[in-house]
Amino acid sequence: MSNCMKYKDYYGTVEYSDEDECFHGKVLGINGLVTFEGNSVQELKASFQEMVEEYLADCEARHITPEKNYKGSFNIRITPELHKKAALCAANEGLSLNALVEKAISFYTGKYFAK
Image 1: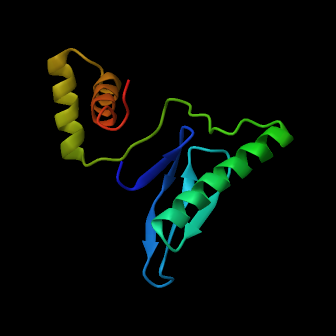
Image 2 (image 1 turned 30 degrees about the horizontal axis):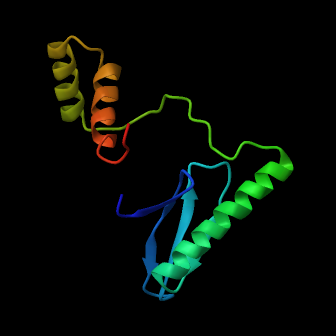
Image 3 (image 1 turned 135 degrees about the vertical axis):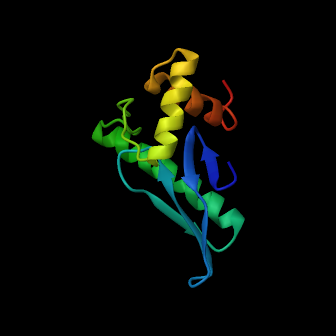
């Protein structure tokens, strides 16, 4: 994942602001908003790790779960043409449309996450 960093099973985005001439990001998949920044890659990494540690300590002190809970369901919007193609592919494979989408997402995310 080239636009993300990882620390202790937490991921953070990596962006650059030309206007501010600094790197910045936010921690993903958590209950809250935690941001970090740095003027170099090394500063960005250090800031990310420091903010994750502070967030985890705060969650422990407040007795809350740090990770966001995912329901396992979400709505997507695609073109009618792609919807039709997906429905036909699912029928051809003997799958529901949900099963086809799950299979596709599993395949795509397998590129980034080892099992």
